Length: 163
Image (cartoon, rainbow, N blue to C red; front, side, top):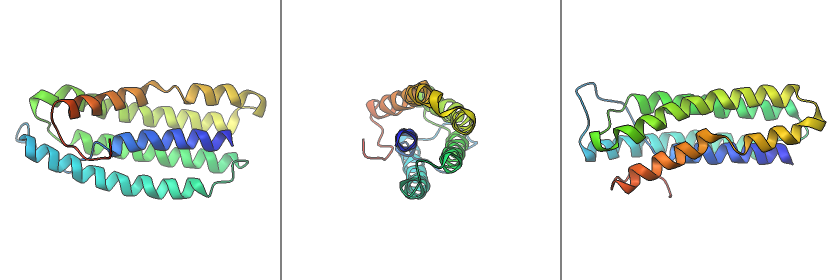
């Protein structure tokens, strides 16, 4: 059951990233606010579909199957990498360039952390797994992502998502 909690925490992080949305970037300089919002909303829709697919797979997960749990975490890491790449392709307006870059960087970092955690799930003795789970729920990249999304929305941008 604790492994399912891990995966749900991971999905909530993906929802944060998906809530920031995007599309293909522009190499001609910063986007106008409306164009940025459109690209971020498009990315949000794309990532939400991927997150929904992973969520469905994780709901059917056998919590006693550590290999499946690790595979679910790796799938989530791949989605975080995809989010980082797509976010990096977007040229944000100058007033949200800093929090946007935080989203790019923290998504990539979260992917690495998720892969490390997947490795730990597979190799950590059951008696020590509870402490690993506690560490996972405190992944600082997730908090940084939430703050970056909040900062962009506080600047008056509608970038999609439910929050």
